[in-house]
Image (spheres, rainbow, N blue to C red):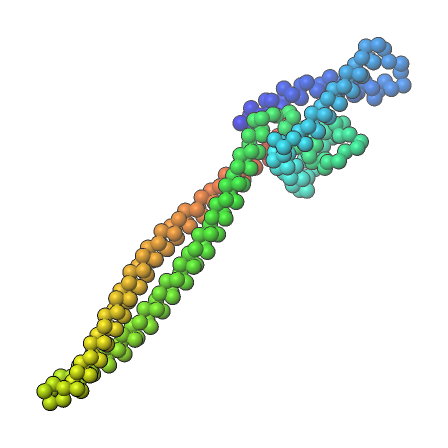
Length: 269
């Protein structure tokens, strides 16, 4: 991809040889009368500058190129902060910037790069945009998973506490019930029927409570088991998404490095 873009750049730049020639002519011969051919050449030169200027402005303002222009402009600013490696490109773009310019010079430089290299270069920029969108979406999903995991963990802890309370009640009621059963076994119905029936009724009632508590403990334990399984699956998914995000970040920087290398190679060509 980099070699193809570089070839496009060389071919495009060959088209501007006559622009540089006429620029030299007008500078060195400004004090001499212009021959008819020179006037025609100067007019053609001026028209070409205006035509390219208009094309660069269209690229800057076009929504289709917005992402590519912004990405390249930021990359150019980053390169210029660290060095003056783009002085040639900087100088070359100067002639196309109008006096009433409203845009940062880095935008004009970005537009010029896109103008020379066309859609092959834009594909790389759009791929970075696509990766960024995917990263944002998956990062939001990761945050949601994390919140869900925390909520489930709190719910499981609440279930554990609930089971502990039920178990404590079960122990107390079972002990009380065992005491009543011992008392019931010491009574004889024919001697004290009223007391016997009362104790037996209380034993039966506590038996129902014991069975109810045991059922609820069993149900809560099953919920804990299922919740643990769900959290296990969610943790696996969380790690998979986190790993994929890291891979996307690496791919994004790989493409950005490719674009940066091309911009710097363009400068040196």
